[in-house]
Image 1 (cartoon, one colour):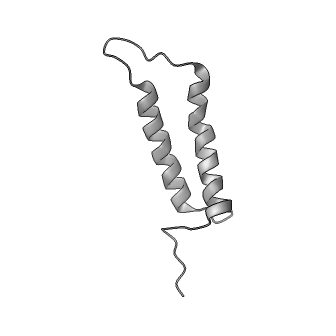
Image 2: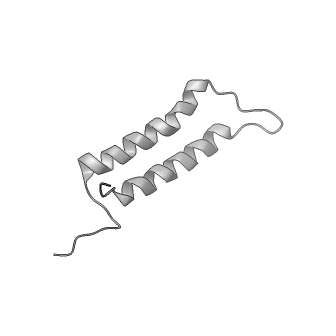
Length: 67
């Protein structure tokens, strides 16, 4: 298994939780009124964030290399 970027995984989990809270929030007594495609932003955003940290940024806050 490839060494995954732990920082990207943590940021993606935080993104998923925050977006889920915003999407499921609604007025009291009413169901949230969002189109179905909006809920696809959760997994798509998580994949984009983890691949961004794995391939572009390449900085891992939790696994620093000592010089």
